[in-house]
Image 1 (cartoon, rainbow, N blue to C red):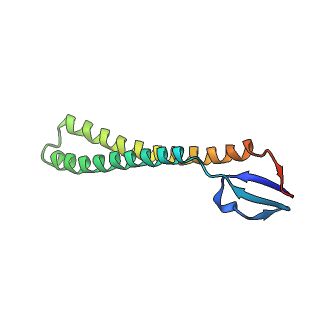
Image 2 (tube, rainbow, N blue to C red):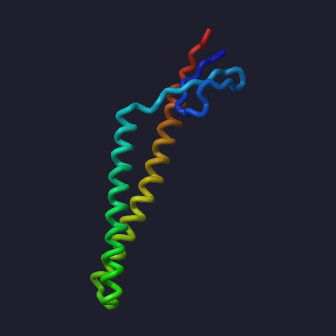
Image 3 (tube, rainbow, N blue to C red):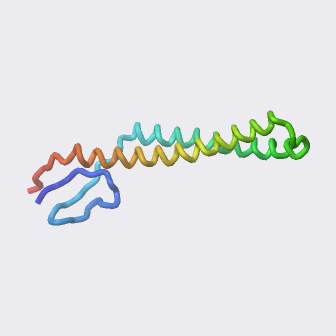
Length: 111
């Protein structure tokens, strides 16, 4: 029987084709960095959402104000950036997990 070092927690301890699967977690430094970036993205999204509320109120009073229209576009783009970045980060984390599977398929016989 072979013992693979994997990073997918859903596979931990399962037997597949006579192979026992176990997990090697993503390093804590990377996990902490991802959490920090996600917090920053949350803050960007929160600030942009508040800004949209204020800018819409101003735009209702001054519907022809080009600067406020530009501000609305910028704030919407900021929200889009935060959402897109979260998706990109999640994909990269999954890629790291998958690449660890490939790199760590240095198969060790487990008895």
